[in-house]
Length: 64
Length: 402
Image 1 (cartoon, rainbow over the protein chains, first blue to last red):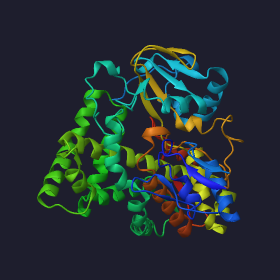
Image 2 (cartoon, helix red, strand yellow; image 1 turned 90 degrees about the horizontal axis):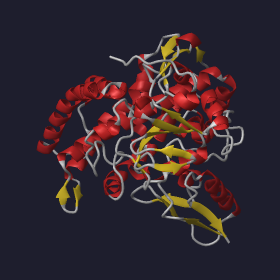
Image 3 (tube, chains in turn purple, yellow; image 1 turned 180 degrees about the horizontal axis):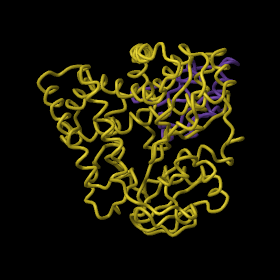
Image 4 (spheres, each protein chain N blue to C red; image 1 turned 60 degrees about the vertical axis):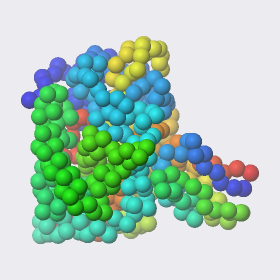
């Protein structure tokens, strides 16, 4: 499992890095970036899924 | 001078967002429109459309091919009669279209990114505490006029680097601008004169004495090696005022109004302060203050209706947030709503550039109010008044705290 942000869809709504700050961060413009590399812990995965469900732009995903 | 208007008979065919029924309680109107239209029309304002669904609002917000942002406040002048500057627009980047939009937006985003905004928390908190100190000893406080209203302009004044001694002058100027949006165009232009004078003086002072603030940043900013045009600097400063002040004032006021009426939600926040970030998003969904506007670029069939070039679109993000097709229990305030894809800050390329600042101010304003007054209630529901226009929030909000 890993998390992805579609940079073409991300508009810097800021939900992912607020909900899951250990998984997502932000760049200089305030757009979301993926911080976590490697396997996510169960807790991180849960927060990442919550971030997916809260992104108004549908820019965040959890993929196999 | 306000314009005399005939009452609305049917919001589906003759809507007016300044009608007293809409101002008092728009939510049942929108629900009715969702079931009947779902794109309402009016001949007022020279012709306008109002999509009441989340799907319709989303489609238009993301469609910069068929709609322009050259003017985002719906007013009585049919826009094709105005010589609107393009591509900059009067207040870039909110009034800019691609491709210039992206250039103007990238310029200001770093100043409003979480990296720049998060460090402001201590000064926002200290501002809120000092405003509450002034209300000490009263049984009834004016939570909108004497608290929420005063928070955003002080933060913006500091960000722009204007003198602290000018706080009251600045607040007056801001209200002249933000309250002028419903006036006819010539009166709006007249209302801008004092702010123009004040800004020119500030710009000159910053040119002579550059310092670490947003004004100096804009004056030094470059596009393709060229300093920004003066009208660009001025337009962006106006945008920061108009977009950053009544909006957040309204969000703070609506949230306090809700808590004053819903003691169980207030008790929950007092008991579980960690719930605040989740609650903030529900306040933003349920009481989203900002409705935007677009203009139709050309005659077309769209969302099943025949739109004409330069028709207005009233883009109701607050209505989208109440659409049951997008949110379960859409008309119920759920303070711990875990999944909340609300669109209070818009969608697509014009996402509110100040959203990180707005969230910070809203959260700290509520945290400090609740810390000072863990129990409060409306002093007199009949005295609560709501703003009219595209920004919705309480303007008078007497709250009993003692």
